[in-house]
Image 1 (tube, one colour):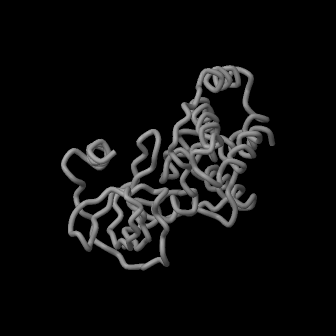
Image 2: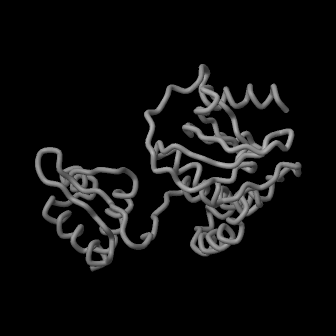
Length: 235
C-alpha cells in the first residue's frame, strides 16, 4: 500500500510537470507497466483528480481542470519561487491580493522542509522594497485586461491620461508589461490606428465586448522595449 501511495504521488507530480504524457512515458518514469499506470490513473480519478485520456497513436494522459484546485507538488526551486512571489504579492503592489497572498504563504510555510526554509528566509530578509509613488493596481482590472489580451478580445475602457483628461478607448489588447514600478498595457488603438501604451491603474474596464480580433505583430524590438521607450519619452 505504501509503494502504491508513493507511486501515485510521483505520478501526480509528473502529470503536473507537463501538459501531455503517453502511457509508455509514464510507465518508464515510474518503472511499472502501462497497465499499472492505467490503474493508478483510475485511483487518482477516484480521489477527485480530473485526468483526461485519449486513445490512438497520439493518445495519452493530461491533468485537466476539475471543480476544485488539486494539491500541487512542487520541487525545491518551484517552492522557493512561489514563496518569494507570494511575499512580493503581499507587499501591496497589486491591490486586493495582499490578504490572500499572506494566507497562501502561511499555508506553504507550514510544509516547507528545513533545508528550503533557510534559503527562503535568506532571500526574504535581504530584499527591501523601495518606496515610490506608483499606485497599486486593482487585481480585478489586471485580470480583466489580461484575459482580454489572452483571448484576443477587443477591449473598451475609460481612461484618464497624464493631463487628467478622460476618454473612452477601444483597443486590441496585446501584452501586459511590468516595468518594476508600474503595470502597462500595450494595445493597438482602433480609433487612432496606432500602438498605444496605457497605465493599468488608470484603466476602468467597461462591459466585455466578446468580439475577437486577429493578433498583430508586436512593434519593432518587442512589447517590453516599446513600452520602455514610450514611458521614457513621456514621463
